[in-house]
Amino acid sequence: MTTSEMMTLKTEPFVLNFGPVHPSTHGVYRMRATLDGEVVIDLEPVVGYLHRGIEKLAEERTYGGFIPLTDRLDYISPMSNNLAYCLAVEKLTGIKIPERGEYLRVIMAELQRLANHCVAVGSFLNDAGAYFTPFMYTFREREKIVDLFDMVCGQRLTYNYMRIGGVSQDIPEEFLPALIKVIERLTIFIEEYETLLKENEILLARSKGVGILTREMAIDCGISGPVARASGVNRDLRKADSYSIYDRFEFDVPTCETGDCYDRYRVRIEEMRQSLRILSQAVKDIPGGPVKAEVPHLIRPPVGEAYGHLEAPKGELGFYVVSDNSIAPYRCHIRPTSLINLSALRDMVKGWKVADLIIIFGSIDITMGEVDR
Amino acid sequence: MTVALSGKDIAVQIEEKFPGSLEDSGKDYLLVKSDSLPVIAEYLKNTDSLNFDYFNFVTAVDYYSYFEVVYRLDSTEHNHSIVLKTRCYDRDVPTVPSLAGVWQGANFQEREVYDLMGIQFEGHPNLKRMFLWDGFPGHPLRKDWNK
Image (cartoon, rainbow over all chains, first blue to last red; front, side, top):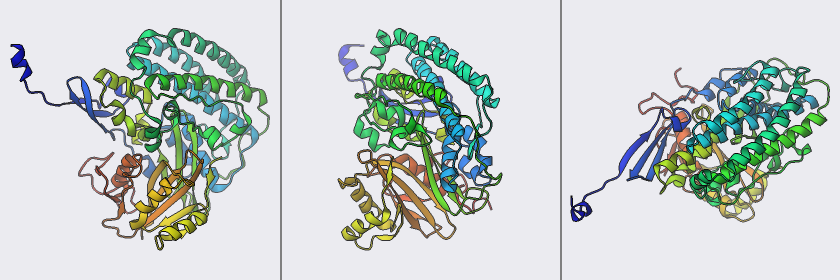
């Protein structure tokens, strides 16, 4: 074929499906990408493959009986889901939580943030092409946190530890010494991990300047969590709408300016450091006493509605609960962090190549259980 | 702490600007007539003292005699919030104007509400089912579904 013949060849957009089952989609998720050569010109997310109707199921369960189902939302961080739901019901009923219960909640929520970011950072690097080596390192550390959860509630994935009015049971004697060891270990680990990756040339080349989410776009789309903070939105509900006892701890809210994939990675690493700071303060201050308020087995909140929200590892997770004074919620809506964080994906990937699409998607850190509910 | 703005105070401002557009207001919410929803939304977003730039969530509740569509808006600048509500009484084709043109964040969530509760968002750029497949019978979050 001569050059002039090649010049007159017609090109047309090409539609490529990623998923529903694809290693890069972190679950059953489909991206319908329209490509011009190698460049993404349009993208349509297709969700719903994991839809279990959890909001409908909530209407047929008692207030306490719904907690195990919240574990199945964002199954990478069930403790935060438990807590968000309990906060909403406690707001509705006005239950006060004992001191020790509050401290245990904060400890679990921060451990959960560490565990989640271990997965997020590891799988992000996986998507960037560093196949499984960094992932294995983070999972080795996550394992230690999961062991701690196993110690307090006997579960490794779906913890069901929080209760309305506190937590289900007190921690065993050996928990706090083990926690201190984990804090020390993780502090060293993060430094070690940083020396490997912070200035890594390949990582910088793959992620710096890629998939930029502007501040305006992040706010307009309702993006929250590390993704928003990487774009310069200084909004962390632990500070902005302080819940539980977060106002007692000293910690910073790390933010970045550019909003590219590298910034999202950086924010997560910094957040892990801050979580360790909160944990070491909580371990020092934790008081004795009961861990759960006296709450009847069947709760009948007064007629009304409440929205309880918290800073989950992935962003703002909220439960909007409507009560009609019966033993089951009349309506329970879940504000899904992961689904809302996906709403800017189309604009983030436009103009980038297919290989970048994978890393941009990976940097958002979503769980399909929460997207589809 | 995020301050929940008093619905009553904002209601006075809105009543002055758009007379007759409100049905009711309460401690932390505004109940808006559905046809004046877009102008009020624009007003809440673009007034400097309110500046509700962050569309937090939208959902709907089925009260048998009407559907209540609930919006929660936040301001990242002033760190305050308000709950906006509107009602639709037509059970066959409940219709509410779409806010996807005001906040992009409304796009996906309105599709979800349409899918599960069957609220038609008028003017939505791509109103199709989100989680369930086309041809799924009814809208499962309605109270009379599958009864």
